[in-house]
Amino acid sequence: MSWGSELWDQFDNLEKHTQSGIEFVERYSKFVKERSEIEISYAKQIRNLSKKYQPKKNSREEEENKYTSCRAFLSTLNELNDYAGQHEVIAENLTSQIITELSRYLTELKAERKSHFHDGRKAQQQIESLWKQLESSKRRFERDCKEADRAQQYFERMDADINVTKADVEKARQQAQMRHQIAADSKTEYSNYLTKFNQEQNEHYYTLIPNIFQKLQEMEERRIERVGVSMKTYAEVDREVLPIVGKCLDGMTKAAESIEPKTDSKQVVESYKSGFEPPGDVEFEDYGPGQTMKRTVSETSLSNSRGEAKERPGGGKSKGKLWPFIKNKNKSPKQNKEPLSNRFNEFMASKPKMTCLRSLRRGLSLKLGSGPEDFSHLPPEQRRKKLQAKIDDINKDIQKEMDQKDALTKMKGVYEKNPQMGDPASVDPRLVEMAMNIEKLQSEVQKFEGWLAEVEGRLPSRSDPPRRQSGLYESQNSNSTMVDNNCAQDRESPDGSYTEEQSSETQVKVAIANTPEFDDEFDDGDEETLPTIGTCKAVYSFEGHNEGTISVTEGELLFVIEQDKGDGWTRVRRNEEEEGYVPTSYVEVFLETNTKGIQD
Image (cartoon, rainbow, N blue to C red; front, side, top):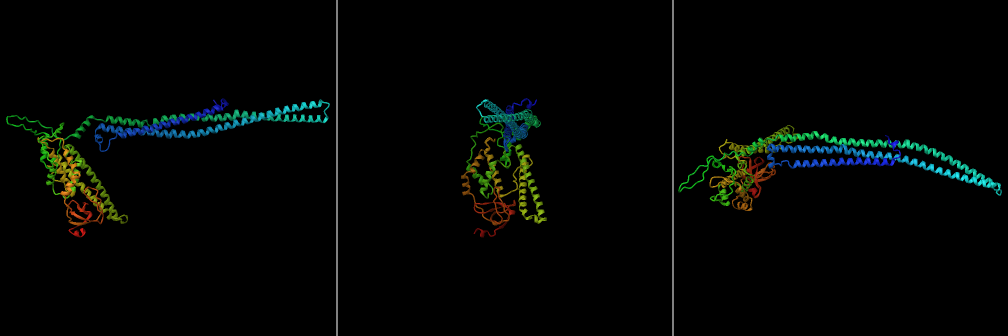
């Protein structure tokens, strides 16, 4: 059914209808836009939720990932993150396939509608103009006819009057004839306008207006069809992501099915197994007159294990809490604690040669601040795992350093063959530094392997210290060992058992070591300035980032206060306040030469 033949007189209504159609497209486009914004907001909230419950680095949650239930939850969070990504895809497709296209189509639709109604108004104005011309010619024809009738009547009166001269009669006759001629011309003009109007009106209502309305009808049908396509695309956008969403849900289901309670229970044993034997039976002691009941310890008890560990050198680092499920917070009344000052005096009296008490305080803070380096505060099984993990990490660092060294060696070879590419000597300082790092890491591996062998029973004790890395390391190692032994003695109660308060006095000593009174006591009383034994000149620049080292620049002159003892480090002094270790290969040493001259 055509609009042109059926709605030829509904120009204004069609104009309103097509305008409402455009408003409907705009409303639907706004609906899709708001849906897209909701999808983006939902995806953002889902991502934030997934990120919020991700395990934090170096936290208890990260440790719990070894359990299948925690790994399943982590997989669920990852799948949820992918699920949020699909909602972002929905928002992007809605924007690109519907919102953008409808926006462009609306611009074209408004322009086309405006053009069609402009043509319709122009045709309407033209037919109205012809109608006005027809009405004007009709009124003029009517007026001229009336004028002709009046002129004819006047002539007849003049002709019948005998008193009127012949000239006046002739004049009236000519006037009447002229009026009749004008009326005839007006009639002809009116007839022409009428014929033209009828032709234009017929063309207007049967040709122009139907064509314009037909174009409007086609435009409106295209608009409706376009809305239908957009609605179909709206559904297809959701349907396209359903397979991936299904995979995400399948991943969540698979993660849930991967949970193994038995495996988690086994992992709990692996994580918390101490390696200690359960305590044996307590022997019966009979009471007699004049006898005192003494507390005895079973031969197979955990306390006995502690006693055996105490007999070994370094055995003070055994586990403090030996009786499970017992918190012995109340000390025995027979246990007399010595003042901390007496303990430090005894500690200073029994220490090995200490060259700098600043290094002593550094050793205390480093050792007690983060726990024993050999993990002796852990049960045997957990200690073995920690030591093995530490050895693996150091081996990775060694391999990395060796790879970098090989690469620099090849680069140096290229420079030697092609001097224009670079100076081979510029690589030497870095190679020397890498060699020292590798040697230091290998020493660290030997040290931890020794502790690991002790735990596994391959070594009788850890009395043999690792190879000395530097004077600073030697002081720290000896200090930390003695502090650990003292702490172990403090934890021993008169009945031969350990209490849970194994770290209380250690924390107190650390607090005292960090107080100004502690610094003043050692700085003012016992510290002695080492004499200079020579001078040295820095061959290369060295940036001392590690504790106990000192930065030097190439060509700088320094005082030597401690010679290299085979570990590759020399101790130097810049002034009364700055001293530390530098690599021996980085300096040229002059012992007992020009010392006095430099001091002056």
